[in-house]
Length: 445
Image 1 (spheres, helix red, strand yellow):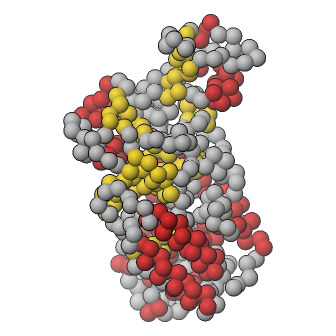
Image 2 (cartoon, one colour):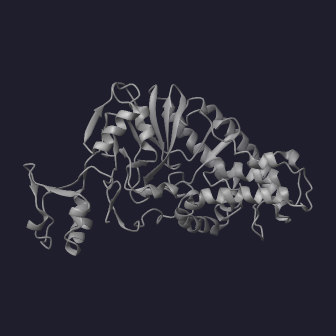
Image 3 (tube, helix red, strand yellow):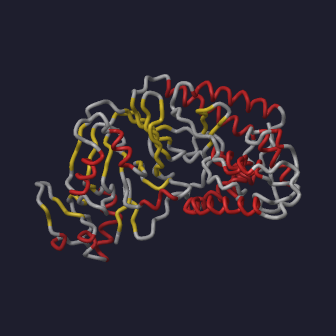
């Protein structure tokens, strides 16, 4: 087993604290990376390229995605093969640490690129035929992008701080991670999954819609922050609610809404939140003493609409934790690299695509009909005609394709190694103009 520097875990967690804002630049970063490629290709002097310059290698997207679901029984074999491969890597001394003195990216020539090549060859991201040299050419660029895609990082081909930290997690730590997650996967697939189901992989913060052991849709997700983790779930969709109401939990009423009403008596009206008594009657906010010792014993219910905390859709299923999946008015959060922002529920990007898939076998609910009801702002529950499972799982390492192993950070610190854990302050910050609520955000404006 290799020695692990004591400060590695701390520096990794401190670094990832800033990752919550890094994802917003993913698209721009990828465009900049392609511009850099074109600049190098078209340069009259390409420099001292020791290897053949192959533009196609760098332009091709990292081929790490598979149509095989994460929870496919066939993946047990892939993870077992990955474990065997990593056992051999560890037995041979692991891989070298990459500590460049300059930022490594396409076109750079530096002695540390040789170490980077070795590291990427050992993990199978760079073909050994690419050779060893000091040149960060398109073969290295393509390999770095492949590595980044396998670790849920923006595949821009640049060795920034996040990529370096992932590269320098020791091989024996990755082997441990694979062993822990193999057991989790085996426990899940030992149970018969439905022909159609929704899978949420919490550490990866994304959703798969699966039909007959093939992925029909993948959606980016926002999951529970570290202080309010999303639970493991095994259930079935009961109904879809278009234009749902949102009812504020008592804790939010006491901690957030009452103080806001003390400062701004128009807060409830501006946010379409109504007060309902035990008989179903609406109570006027101006009749309430907002400075009383206790918050009013009333229901705080937000009307359907664009500013509703669940926006236009909600996916319901029985759960002892009373969690669910839903839309959100704060779409910008999906651009973040670290999407651990909710209080347990799961927000789904492009959720209407998922709703269309869920209602595929429920008569009378085409995409056009769904959009018409959403536009009406009328609260509409839709019971399903067929069985659709819901499975929220916790897998930080998996493989759905030969020789492609995916790793994610251990956001809830369940893998047993501090080097894989995120900083405990990730995801608890308030979003400007919003207050954090039980499962989403209530806008203040």
